[in-house]
Length: 244
Length: 244
DNA sequence: CGTTTCGTTGAGACTAATCAAATGCTGTGG
DNA sequence: CCACAGCATTTGATTAGTCTCAACGAAACG
View 1: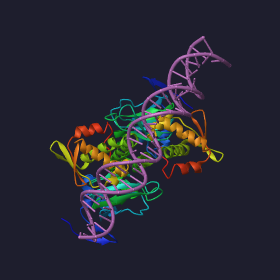
View 2: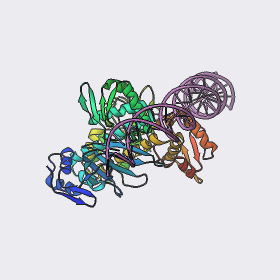
View 3: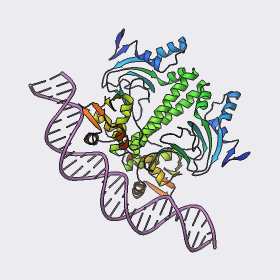
View 4: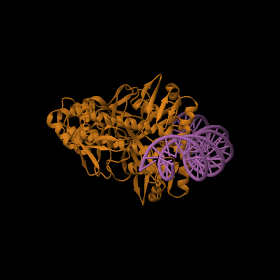
């Protein structure tokens, strides 16, 4: 079920799918036709390959819907070090500030299909439908809550707590039940995890090793995790929140 | 210019002022009368004394407008340690999640006047005015941006960078120009600063001492700061963002 | 199959936390 | 106005935890 894929510049624009998922996931079912078509004309629907940064050099705030795949939102801090502000997965709606002072970059962890909008007209349009704007507001407040939880983790957690909390969050978001545990395939590298939790790659590696030795999880290759003892992981996470 | 102050329970409800400031600061000037009066009946306008927690035990998400004074939004993490998610000052609008799992508490740093709303009807009502809901959305996105900046600080900054960045942010928010520097009166304790930056009180104290020895600032009592060399402070903050 | 990137492991350095104690401020009652 | 009690803040000594540097092993890629 795919068709009409046209190259524009280096990006590949497809006229189907990503927008439809956006519609199904975000827009209310009873949205009137004219409004829908305005959303459609506002959307830039593109496929992004692993490692690419679809929004490079955008001069306006953007709102991006991830139809499939996964991305990271990276803030560029001092001297080469990066802080990953969050990971996004299918059906997430993420707001990306204009490429200004301390630039943010959205970067694909896997091949993705996304629908991207300029924030100003997007909110303008959304504002015309009470139900819709409230739904979007709720997503924004969710992001805020999420970010606050992340602050707690970053400010207060030990390396162990951070890793345990991270794995639990991932299991919740993209894990599949398996026996009495969960199976997760992580699309991000150790460096990404480190940059997300404010740790060094070596520390991430060591902590994961420790959890493996404590039989709380098994790994398979570098991406596949079997979390066998969720309760014990939760204990190691302290009562830190499950972050992104 | 104050009148009609009535005690209700332990809180003191005033029927003026805080709501008017909310109206002037947040609501559009041309808002129609019926809508305005609905906002008014939604608002709970109270005076809060230093140290009090106005929202204790609220079971719904709240939106709070700080008309005067200052507050801290505290997340309760593990074993007694607290993470301060943000400080609020006059004219700030802050969203406070329901008092659930890892409870958030809004706590007054000084005597405050606030207007508090249940989030659901508040957004419902705001959603009926395109311009208004967009303005509120923008505030929410500002909070999100703010929180993301804070994540960067927490994740990547050294103690020195955190303190320097914090002082710069405070100077920007509540400081007054003084000579070629700024004068700031901090309403929060060392512990609050520590809990906000993910440091210990001792480290906060030591870092401030270092900045004083380096002649970047002077202190007067425990709350008054004279930041004499903003540029040098900025340098010490790295290119970390100015957080809250 | 060779090359390169990514991940793991080890040893040592360094930052910030913890523990302990002294000093300074603030508010209260005499 | 002063003395005092109770905290808040500062300072010092030690320790724990994480980063850095360095080397090795494993997986991905052409």
